[in-house]
Image (cartoon, rainbow, N blue to C red; front, side, top):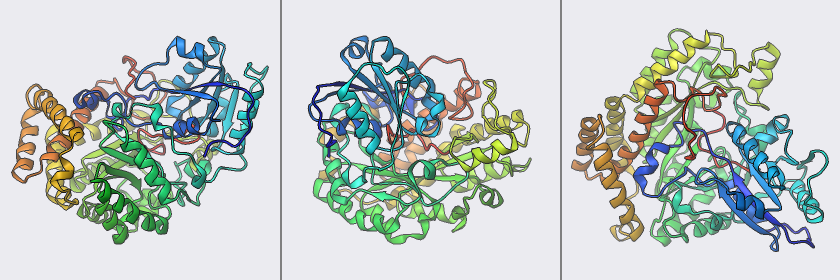
Length: 543
């Protein structure tokens, strides 16, 4: 639904989403292999706000991960809406400056300003919290007057709009074909309270839900666009935050896939105790879920207790990963280095976990304290929050900073040596990919799929299989997959490995930060490769 606020004026709203800092999880090095892909995932939250605006207001949308907003677009607008995460703070402030220079009212909402409003004193309006009564008040104020207020106006949501009343995000405002994956939201909130995570403070511990009918309508809108992404990611904070609701929703998703010829694959993020839910896992397999992001954080059980993540120990870690693999789910793992419990032996334990788990993709970051988390509160009391642009984190580790960074460097070098990476992919061929639902050939041979396969196959063959210095490791794994009829695995391995290996080499040269949230400046060119009131995450905010 749109806002029900009656308006008397016609307004022009420019929604601008800031570029992301490159990371392991944004896959920007893989975009050139995909033929026209420019960004990771559509920003679910700002698209929701665009759809919520009054019908008589004209709305335009620019994702600066695809292209920069132009001077003409700023000149056209009455107000500029911005959203983003903490990692995008410099880009957020840059948009503010450009908007106000053009005479526009600058409005900021989303997780970063909701968690840390003091970071953004220059915006004309700040919107704290999710879409709701504050959003309607913002509309009333802009309807009455679009001149810049004499002082910053702070609006905070007290009455949130129910997810069942959310409009379909304005997918039509963005070229979905330019994204690596699509985005979709079923629930909001997470029942757990991991020490480093700001989700409970921002979105609550009791997951709120959309209806299955809503979800299918949004999927219809996504697949209606020619060249839509082949994978759609559920941006839910925890896909099994409400297990009963997930179990009841999934049969609708299975039926939609069968009815529409399996036009997409799905991915999501969840806690590792998902492995104890065989009914949900089987329904996910039937619905063509292929990847799940799991915040492993650390293989050390004592450390999990300290960070309030004991639910990761609900099943033995390696056993839980193997269970997810048996339902066709490839695990992507979040790893945190710099925890208080780390010792000189922690690095060896992590390397052993990487090798034994055979998880291909691990997003490894140094611990970063986010506002509105128990970690932030504890470290503030201990005097261990630091603001030093020369450092990789805002946490004063118990181990020397340089030792923690060196450990991170050795860990990524180990994980993403081409031989080890492709060995882990070979393992997935045998234990994961063979367990996925078999899609009828008539459904797979669509024009979009054939176009994607031709473009991606050619680029992988040339850039990875011919020109790369790791081509032998690639061809050994590719040959192994082809002998087992796993053609899709060759494409997946090729483009994922291409990004991970290149990004790792940049990081080892000091061209990338050791933490996705680090403020340390590194010498690199600006890249545009990558909510208001919701996030469209490049990788999980908490890790």
